[in-house]
Picture (tube, rainbow, N blue to C red):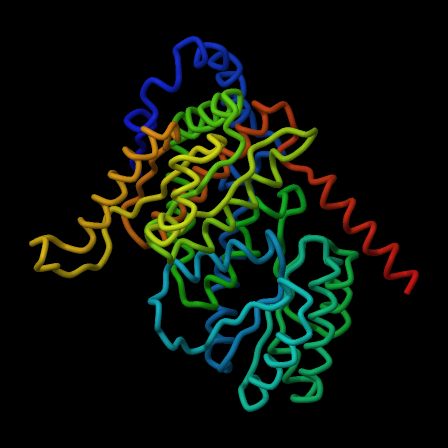
Length: 403
């Protein structure tokens, strides 16, 4: 990974602003070496169990062999990580076997009816994921498909086609797994859902998509070497906030990263968006959004700064008009936009990964998790709770009981 937190920031950040947070940042970085439970995702050896890893790989191979389609039922941290990795690491138009379809991310009856029609003549398996085991959207959709599966297959066949991933031993999903004999994969209870990308919540769906989860974990482990850069990134975000920059645009020039940015948005928004604090994350897909949101960024209300996620090496071809590869043209656009936006008082933090591979995304995932945790600490909020999410869940539960 490469970082440029200077070229497109320049005179917008003063030494005095950096000095204001340097001592606090050093204290925060010290937390990562103290073995705190809340940061256990940072210490790979504490929760990545080789036996569980082998089980996931073996089980994924078995399901791939018997399935035309595998449904991943989850929402939020139980879904975004695997969506991000599967989108980023597969060709755009590959007709995969089995096909991976995500459900449970909403409560659209139109989508579920159409999906059941689509699946009618296909062999289907399910991985249902909920850390608590009681997430309303996940349970609602899973119970619909579980009933559908028992109409489609024998009890014994359903048993081999459903895998439950949860951390709770007393949640509804754990109950179903015990009652019906489903395979059960574990999410460590001390890990918040949005930080669970290095657990079975994401690793097993990646394995179902035949991605290299060992390389992904190795990349994440090596990504810890970027703790200092993650701290600088968190500190600059905090400084921008004090300067009135309330929105961070995560800008990508490769649409395959669209779901990855959705995961990044969740990590930052849910971690630091508390006590009327935090930075609002938004997704910018360039060059498309340069023809719309680019106008606002260049000349509108100066509340935005950008973080570019760049890919160093991609497949490409020659563009005769410019006597250059399309990839290099894309990189030229990246730099040109950063220069233009800086002139419009929009600074850019620039992050580059080597390529579209599991190892690189493991590094990138670890970098952003470290950054989100440190950024939250700099805002003096707990990175690992989500009281606002709990509030809406309580309200839904109350209103559903009153139906």
